[in-house]
Image (tube, rainbow, N blue to C red):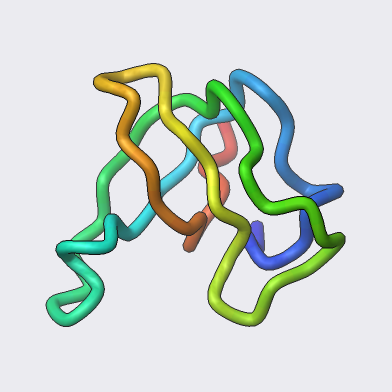
Length: 66
């Protein structure tokens, strides 16, 4: 599922994000959503979230269907 709409992302959802340091390479990091950091309903580069694992922050690229 697409990570560009805030309504698609729920707390605790398993997602793939791209961290700021990995934006050039596009390397994805998988984890569970702890907090939604983007207030707008959509964002062209993905909704910014904080993961439960290590409090990493990045933009959602994919929502993993569990």
